[in-house]
Image (tube, rainbow, N blue to C red):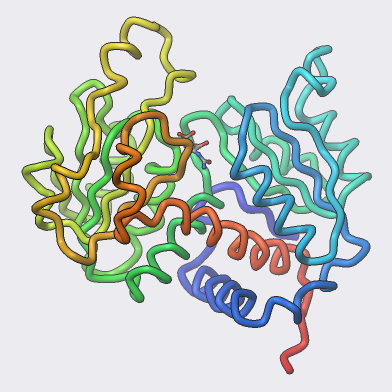
Length: 308
Ligand code: NCD
C-alpha cells in the first residue's frame, strides 16, 4: 500500500505516468467515469480549504466514487480531544482512501502509520503540500510543454508557503531549472530547504528583493499569499501583507509567454486586472488540479482503466 506524504515519495517516472493519465482524462473523460464505482474517499480537513478539498471530492465523484468527511476540526471529534491516530483508525474502516489536511507538520505522516488505507497529505502546516505540487507540475507541463530548461521566480511568503517548499523540492529533479526567490527578508525560504535542496544538490539559486529586477528573465512567476494564520504576531502580518503585489505595470518587461501561477486563495497579491492577461494561468491551474488528483486516486487505489 502506498501513501503520498512528501512530494519526493513519487519518482520522476511516476509523476510522468500521472501526467500521462491526467492528459488522457482530459481527452477521454468518459472512459474513467465508472472507474472508482463503490470506492469511497474521505476528506479529513482539520484546517480550512476550498480548492484542495473540493477538487479531491470532484475528482472522486468524476471517477464514479463517493465521498465523506469533514471540513473543519470543529466539526470532528478532534474538538473533543480525539487523537489523529484514533480518527484515522476509525475512518480507514469507512473509506478506501483518505485525503487529510492538518495544521501540524507531520500529522499526515503519523496518520499514515495507523491507517489501513492510502493516506494523501493535503497540506501539513508550513511543511508540504504534495498534491498542490502535482497540480503545479501538471500546469507547467500543459502551459509550457516541458518540465526542464525553465527560470522560475517564487514570490511572496516563501517562509510559510508549503506549496513553495514542495514545488522547489520536486522541480529540483528536472534539468536546467533556475530558481529565483523573490521575498522580503522576513519571509525568506527556510534554511533547511536551502541546505537540503539547493546546497546538497549543488543547484544555484538567487535571492532578490524586487520582482522588477528579474521579471524579463522569468518563464514562470509563482505568486503566493502572505499566510496570516502562520504569524504569531498580527502587527508583523499587517506590516508584510502588501509587500509583493503583481500588477499590469510590473508585467511590462515580462516575457510574452510568461506563465503566472498561484496556488490560490489570492488576497491582494495579484491585481484582478491581471486576470484577463492570457499569461495568468491560476484559474486553469485549479482545473488541472482536479485531473491530476483523479490520476493520483486511480494510482493509489491501483485501479486499471482498460485502454481502448
Ligand atoms: C495553499 C495552501 O493551502 O497551502 N492553497 C492551496 O492549497 N491551494 C496556499 C495558501 O493557503 O495560501
